[in-house]
Length: 393
Image 1 (cartoon, rainbow, N blue to C red):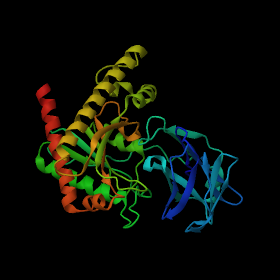
Image 2 (image 1 turned 90 degrees about the vertical axis):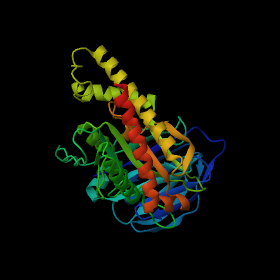
Image 3 (image 1 turned 135 degrees about the vertical axis):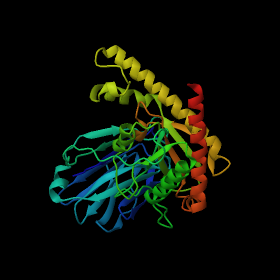
Image 4 (image 1 turned 60 degrees about the vertical axis):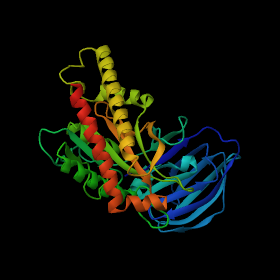
């Protein structure tokens, strides 16, 4: 059972925002505001079954008819300084994912079916916090999650293609399965489909180069949790991890690719968690970190800083090689607290290949020619990156 309650905090806006409209788009609920909101939280209610979304510092908009599992969308004041959007359900549904888009002006929630017992059990779960990217350092989000945990087992690792003695690059196609990612509002083009096509194009280009081995975290339409994505790469001892995504905004004509690497602030907590819960001797090869906590902290910190520097170096290379071949933003390399980048010992980037919400970008991303240019950008950057590493030894 999965109950996901979204809570995202922002710096207070100058004036109250208004809920402009609420859209039901397949399994996604899109709540659009006329400005960035202070904070939003989603939770489930029973008798009757509802999903409620509270928006601090916002004014409610009109109530609307529902669609699919959502029978109606009701809005009203929550106290004197906030709006509440209520989704009336005709069958049990839970929020299985979500977050803010368009710099805090759109809240996107992903709904997933469940049963009555799991829906009722979802009400009293405690939140799990995380910090997304795209709206400055003060944006903070938390999910409330409960789910049945299957027997602990590791999924089989994907097959790596290429010569056995070559460096390994793991390509991660973002989203998948019940999580479509961003969706083009006019064509219905889904991020999960585009990222898989791009990942396969990059794999083919890299394998053809003969310089590296390549593996995909997913080669079909399946869902992987974030830790499993970089976990696969770590288990395979990858030399580089690239997570492929598409950007999206609720309005405007934003365009261009960007690459994200892990911010230093975010990395500290992950290093602490890793030191506490994983086999630390796997992180620093040949050094038993259990013997001295102070040595453990120092070595993990040094390893992670080196990894972050390597990640940033590859992101800059990718920006340089991509600029002549595809639309890119002027500020290509950015830093953010992203779970998929938090492997402390493996250079990692998240590559936002363009805006699926922009007609020109979407057409480029969904074309064979566009994917070939993206793949060539990555191939060039990967070749230079590993050539430099070999030369530095």
